[in-house]
Length: 394
Image (tube, one colour):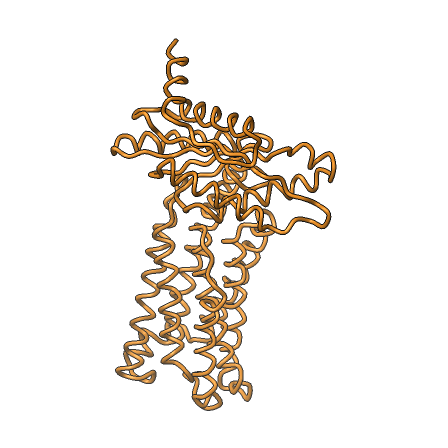
């Protein structure tokens, strides 16, 4: 009895597995809105329709179905990569996702698809290798404190990428009609291996989706919902830890306290909606003026705080001035005038100053800025810092 499965039977089996997983991923996405589940739902849909198109090989529809199958399956591989990137809080650019399917489309439609079931095979297999290898790479470098299942999935994806690389090499060196290719790398064995990978994915789905959901919930808990900046508690925890690290390495940091001038008057005159716009505009101005390594937090109400690792007090004052320039250049809602900003600035001098002390010094400088007429930057001098230090010791 012939025990070797034919390509049609294996592809039907793969289709059944794909449909089942598609339903599961769609349910998961509907419940969690996890980007990972969303991308995998799209990938499975592309795999399912693409493999269904391959079932039309040998029929009058092969002319269009074969290239469409190639395009959709490659698109599915790149969608898997996009899903893996979301687990690293990254996004694939649209052109990155489109280039593989686009190149495959050109190669497939120009390679006599009506008579050649391997139309565009050289490009198709190469793009599958690239898409799956990229997914394996991003899966491996996911940072997760909850689960290491992504490592196993990365290995599985890496093995599949290696298999497709083998298919491509044998396709190039021996051709699709060779004994080696049809026995080990043809449609039937490749569909069977894909089926095994999909089953592996099904076991990892819950862990990875939950991990992404937990991370998203923590992110929302750590940030102010209006401005998207760190909340006070999270900012202080992160800044204190970073300050200790910097001081142990013989470096320092600067603190900037900022207060929107006469903010209550903005709310009273223009409404709380205008006040919210002002807070958001200031947050955006801060984000555009600092480095990715700097920390920005909403300290309370209309007061904000910045932690600038390695920055001198002079550099911090320059950054505060840049923030004010950006804020002044931000278009306000019609009839609304955004408030000016007062700043208090200090650095981690004297050596060994802790976060509490630095904030007290910056707060005193901010008070001085307000007393001098607001809309200005006041840097704490050493004499002022020494007075505060003496008061703290007494």
